[in-house]
Length: 430
Image (tube, rainbow, N blue to C red; front, side):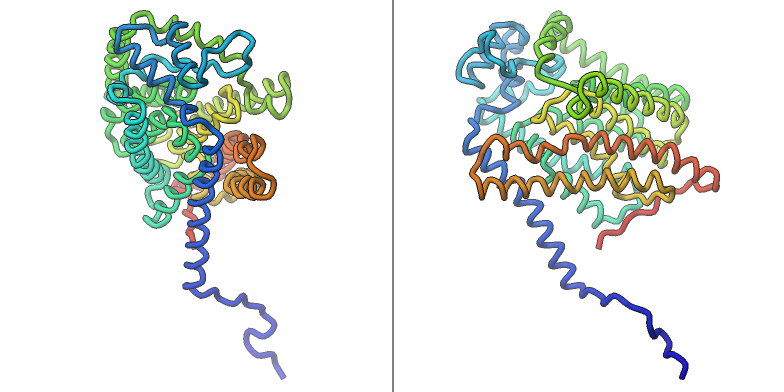
């Protein structure tokens, strides 16, 4: 007797739609509640004054009074607010001064006019929704054809990732940079070079994190003769610097002198894993590889896979080779474009696919580590160790950079050889 059609073929039972929706709802609730609860546990032992906006807020107030925000007197005022006392040379702690370029004073002036509580609350109420909106724009810039539901999920997971939640707890000005850069890239992909140039100029308040991207964009603009982008960027940056110099005369030399205090407190991410010399060599290799690929992508047309890949690579490598310590994991917000590109693409070459899986595994681990920290706090009590567990995913930008580099090196070569110019196939979320 011949076998029946389909006999011997194992079929997985279909999961009911209602069950999938329930599982997704539970996942989303867990992702949202876990980091908020962990921040609550940390807040019970962490003084409210331990906030990264403190130094910038006091420094801005001093600048508005005509004083130097980088002066030793201002730094002592910041330390008294933050630590309750001024630090002495024997203290091995973060100096907590006004560490940013003085352009930040122009942007924070509206918040510094109010009291500390009002200014901090106002900053959070403004930056949180705008950051979410900018991530939505980033999704549209990276992959315009992504369904709206998938884009919404990407925004949700980004906002409730530990780097973002921790940065919001600290009222981190780095999120201002992310907003300006994400919106600027989105405007550029929509052929609006003037607004893009203005937004990108406003995003220069933390130069090490945006310098690779800006250098590549200048090269790209020259090759594409996008003079409107160059002129609008130059004019906006000049006006910003003129306003800054008017408020804080001679600020640049004062800022450089202040930065020397941060040397003993920071290392490169790869130094933390491989040690000083090997970590420096690995970081230099990663930076050189990325620079080579960015040069190869210099002719990418706007709104293309290549352009989004180049911008994402420039941002992720900047985070990967910038000095850091565990609490500054909020800088990972600038790796969001790279994470989105990897999530919503399906490489066909094995090395690129493997590198993507490793990067996405670290991305998922960042969410899991928050749950691990909560479990540890519940079983053994809150401590500095459990506070820092979610920050152990600090190598994520490095993994994202490597995955993007493999994508650029192998995937694009394979696509061009096959005559494929379309964007990668978007991954549907069940």
